[in-house]
Length: 65
Image (cartoon, rainbow, N blue to C red; front, side):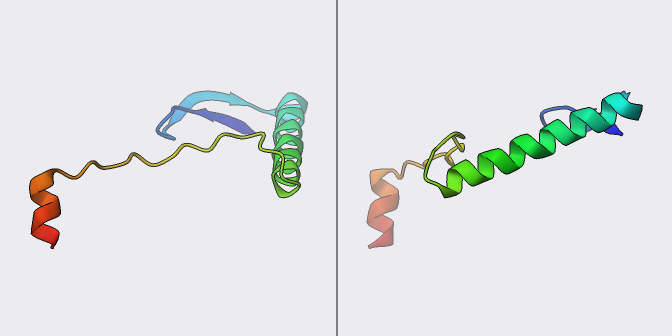
């Protein structure tokens, strides 16, 4: 079974079952393993999102000293 989700990981009602669902899951797993192996070899195939940088104001920087 393969269930679709929204961007915030809440599930939607659409699911895929049977041989089509099994094939889709198999392809997802193979792709994931391939990307992890390429990352280990140094090939950057995936661009991971960077956390937002918080800008400190001058007042905040003076308070830390």
